[in-house]
Image 1 (cartoon, one colour):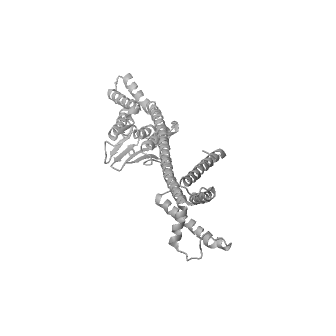
Image 2 (image 1 turned 120 degrees about the vertical axis):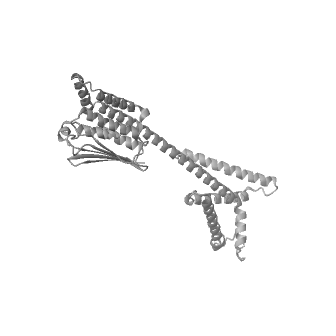
Image 3 (image 1 turned 60 degrees about the vertical axis):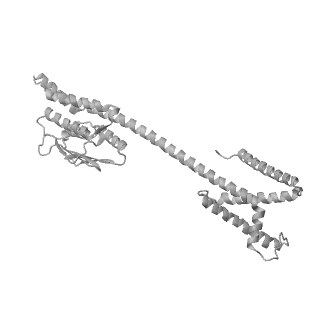
Length: 361
């Protein structure tokens, strides 16, 4: 909240009220005790205390850090020492120039007596200033803790908002990618192959069973309860895609799948690896027996590396209208579940297309 004139006025009114009450209480105690009840000497002593109090606090406001208790105590002791030295210069050096002698300055100076006398005269001001500064240390510490808690809370809320937004985007992209997969040209061609077999008297039962099982898996993984699947399940989808393509297009070269060391229970985003193989089946040249689609996978305790390589079919690429939606959805999923620990690297030299997915655990 900004400081206004009204706030300053109220603050100084409180100060004036406190000092007025202190002066009246001191005067009343002197009156009860039978001491001098003249207000002038009490007022002079009172002004001395008040001046010392505000002088020490002004020094504190400008130079104290209030970060640590012992550091603040050292700064307070240093400020009191400065006041003592300034008082010495005033009493023993400056005022005698004008023939003003507050004490018997002709006697030999004794440091211990000087400190004792100054402490005796400044005791109320020193006590109130020290107490006030210690209260400020406690208040500063409380404010720092409150600010840290506020910052942590804001950071947590922002992280939750980002997490929620990423999850929502991830679900939207994943569903869109699955919808694109379900209506893909490759899927349509498989269903047309089954239809042609039925019309020709060939029931194509095996191909039909494999395709319906694949469709069932696709619909299963659309749901929010199956965001992550095991590496075993994902490899099952990849093998099913390769098997269906071999049944639907027996004239094409079979997909070569190579497994390295595997941790089969490793959790990865659903349908994240099979997207690359489907793209290879849709856009690759599968007629060259020397260069089949190659899928390689290895997974150990530190990282997972998946590679899909296919020979490019220029005719398919020219006819296709790829939106790269599947790859964008995959990148979003990897960023969500493995932030700063996953990479997608794509190589296209005009003859071969290679995509490599690396995930560090």
